Length: 286
Image (tube, rainbow, N blue to C red; front, side, top):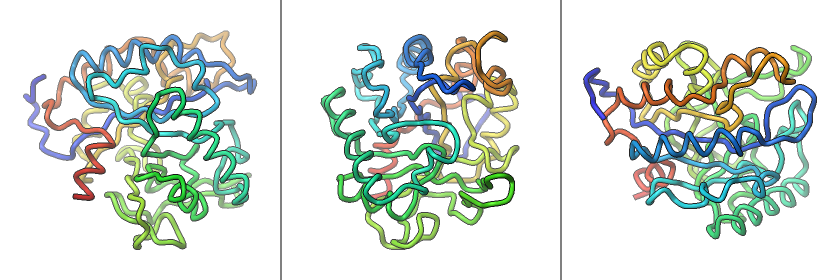
């Protein structure tokens, strides 16, 4: 893997949310997991690129056996909550403490049983972490959270704020016990998802690579000034959706079964710049 471009910026973490397909009709399907994820993991492993899997508890039974290995030590294992429905009802920040305790414990147990390994890392659906979420994660033994997306601002009905990460730090930090976007002394390490420099408040991710092309995606990556660049991927971005599929137009544009764009992007960066969540946690806590 060459480094002809001379990118000397952040270390790069390719992080995958393994979840139900993002459909308009609300049906629970896992085509991205069954068809797309295996070929993308093959690509990462063939290049020796470490990666994360953040697993939604509701889909653990649909994950192909080949993904259960650790890719010769390349994989970091995380949990992506219990369900990933669309809309405000999926926001953990809108759930009660008792609901969080049940859902996060159930999801953690399911991932542990399926993989034979307890997840250390967590990412909330729709970046919806909260003070109570972090507290429950601490009780469950998690070491890091990667749910904050600096610059993200979401309003329901375009009026009522339901998520505001505009002032969140962009490098890893320990949150306060009162707010996940304020630095403090909470033991869990927050590893923010990287905001796309070209589309503030949106993640720098695989969907952007598919929609804009590897050259533009690389220019965005090269302009990141954070310590780490978290490239966020979703399993449903790893298949090609047609006009007859019940998905939004933007989902169709940002998804592809071809790994070519990702390979072109990865080959522009020297291999020693890639890390996963295990390595980031180790670097930040030792």
